Length: 295
Image 1 (cartoon, one colour):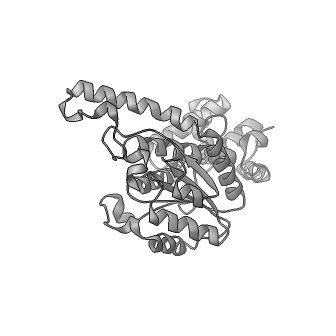
Image 2 (cartoon, rainbow, N blue to C red; image 1 turned 135 degrees about the vertical axis):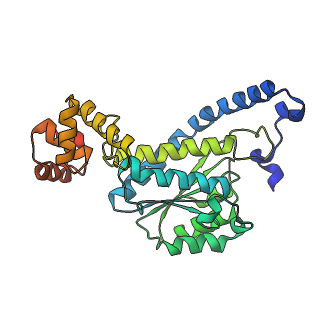
Image 3 (tube, helix red, strand yellow; image 1 turned 90 degrees about the vertical axis):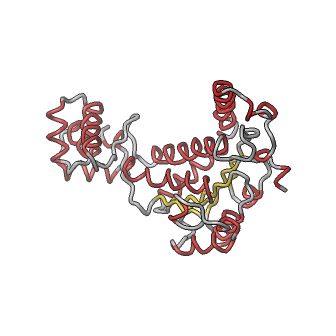
């Protein structure tokens, strides 16, 4: 029942929200938001399990698939679409599914989240296999669309993860790994786009970033597989090569051209004096890890 969920209870500190001054309202929101990172911290062991499962999946050639409804679905989609430019992944490697389809990202599709069958069908439509991993995101922890998707994933042997904001949740009971963050009641009762949404974004940040580190998409703290899709990213790539190799701007620019605008290849070329082909072979031998390639 909704009334038993922490995400649906009233916050005693904001019972007179409509009477507060603007600064008082913002202050209480800020104080409540400050609790989110600590709540996420309590779930780090479970998040670590999920990251390790994602890394294992990626090493086998599987996909990371987020599935959710409403705000939860949008957060998964947001994380998915940021992976190609940041980590050089293919657009099919990290996928975000939202109840009601892509149009639901900008306009709610009424009733879509209430259908288990829709969650199942959306996963079938992308040809889910047991090589993949499915992360179900649901603030309440009871969204039928997500539960249906996770149940179907389990039925074909796919690894599953739940991300929600209530303990002992329905999605948590279905998933192989349950990440259940307790943020406390929202400032605006039941508005889970607030603290719940913030915690879900933090967790997705961790899942994608840490797993990409785990499969060699990062050197130090540099995103060496960044895609050069605009002028800003071209300049960022040059700085990445400069930071990684201590070379000057002109050398970074020259080697990026030689490396077909692949910072990772340019870095290996510079650090150990290889041709583009030799650097590519070295990276292939080390599964894309720059640090191992340049030893």
